[in-house]
Length: 172
Image (cartoon, rainbow, N blue to C red):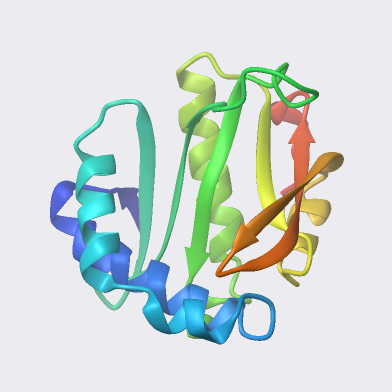
């Protein structure tokens, strides 16, 4: 079941966020950084996000347990090749055991429907180039439009930006 997230979901979203990072980014992000991820810090972050009206956040549940989430809204970039896109998928994470069931597609489609209702017609997402899940965005029809170097835990990594000029054409 997918539904709009509420403030009461902050702890569950934080748990999925931290656990997903620890399973997805092993061997990509330094282990010392992954070990420092804090549920309390992520919960405070999600409480703040869920208190703002400019973010769209949805959760997916299995057996009444939150196993994934997606968040998005207006594009945060104001210059460069990605600035012409009006929307952005900020984050999408699923627990490892919830992956491969089509839940990611369902979360993205729910976010896209919400963004369209808000007058957003194009979208970007930034993803670590070494993240094997980046192919998910390619299967959805995202085109690589930019890249930039970022630093996480003292390690230089590349992020790729995928874009959809018209989210109505996104593959399902």
